[in-house]
Image: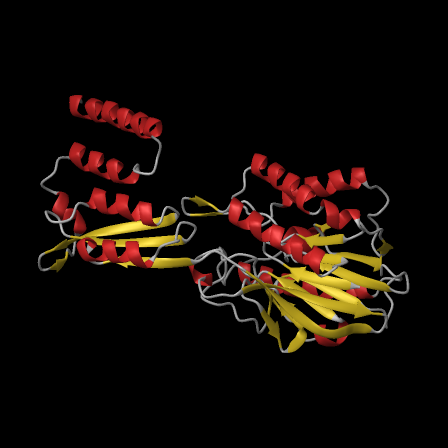
Length: 411
């Protein structure tokens, strides 16, 4: 059985003003291509399939994209195993799970030997089995969603915690006890190849610059000391930096795209491995994924830096850029500078600017605006911010602003 491990797709995510849908869909299409080229039997997506920023209509379109991209994979008997992460909407995933249950009833019991050629989504801790395409052996899978109270602290007593620290301690214990409870299931057999797929921060992981949209205080760090001996492969999601934890077969695949500036230097990839009747066969292979460049640009002198950037960054139309502009009033036109930067980096996702006096940067940039009226300040600000909007949108917003300014002046 050949398996591919990936995680943290965050489909329909945004970075500042930029919708990442197309970037992420291209990455999913690359994963599907690897499944085809490598003759993968099982695709494991270890959580955070969707972005919490996604609208319902965007989620619907994403499911349709999945159907198109993985139709050939599922049609030839490939199986997709997924589980929910901390950024997945529990309500949406539960609704999707219920719909899948209606379409394919009779496959929802713990420990079932499930048919191939389908997508299975685990919104709760799940144990299932799959037969190798050769029919010679089975593989056991434990699917462990991100540890939340609704998934792991069951019953009234389980919900009785007094502070976040106690809640996290209870979740760590419940997560680890749930794994052992699933391993005691009557259908779980020692000596049969076993895979744990989990969305969790496992002790010892190298996080990188920061966690993705969750604070260390909010996160739950579980102990994975027993994983090495209990499973032939541990497919982890949640930490976006690809790595293995002490043992080659305990791995974070990392995210499929660079999601923010903290991942600017990351190399993205997926993991491919093979299981036989006696466990893992051969080496775990890392298959690289191309990803979108993300970086910062600091413009200290527009007159000098703009021509240089124009020459040095040819082909940066798809890059995701955070712009920092320093300019000198009376010499540099901020509007023109921002316009030219938008032409060089059309996918800038954030920007800021400071006015530089002849003696250096202003300690209080707002002081330079004190000679302007309130109305002039508003018009200048909107003029800069609306450069990349359509003429109709710009005219509509500016017209509304003029009405409000007229009311304010009249009052």
